[in-house]
Image: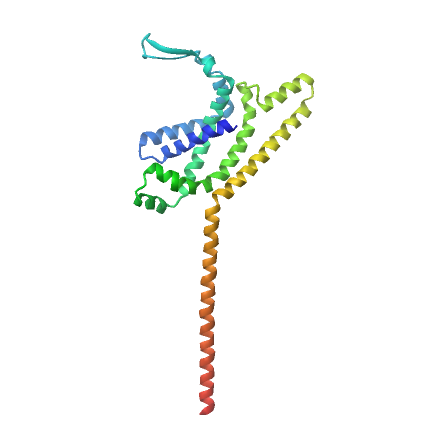
Length: 256
């Protein structure tokens, strides 16, 4: 899960940047990637990667349309069960995460970009120091949900098949001892434990990236309270002047 998520996040950031690029070729490639991997079931993709060595028995490097070959290797050596599972999960997840990252980037105020350009920042420096830190506040909550979803999606890698996965292992033990229900409960408990840990980590990340915004809200509320107090003082002063004016008028009438 962690390995697939790390690869998916890296790919998602790249895809999001391609979607926002002014180059139509990059935008088109990113759109096609997202369209394809979001539009096909993850189970089907895992089956394909599991059968990759059957479809492509040998990977080679040479001159196309000739018999010249510089290097070749058996596909089974490259595309192991673990590799197929990680590739299938990460490519599928990257398609979903890229839209989350793109939404987070677009949520950053355009004035931040203009200010960064005015300071002479390069595009990469602006993304690292200004845009991404602010976008993370919006990206982290759905990213945590996608990570938890990825954890449960790993149960589908039996399509590869990957024998070290939790669901595959519990099914194998259940078939051997003829007790499927207790083993399903064991798998469920493990999923709940790992999910709980991920939820705690998500909460910590949300607090970390929300520090600056919380401080800004506190300052904003304090400023509003100060303005309200000032308006209240002005209103009280005006009332006092009105009372004084009425008293003066009454005294003048009494003297008359």
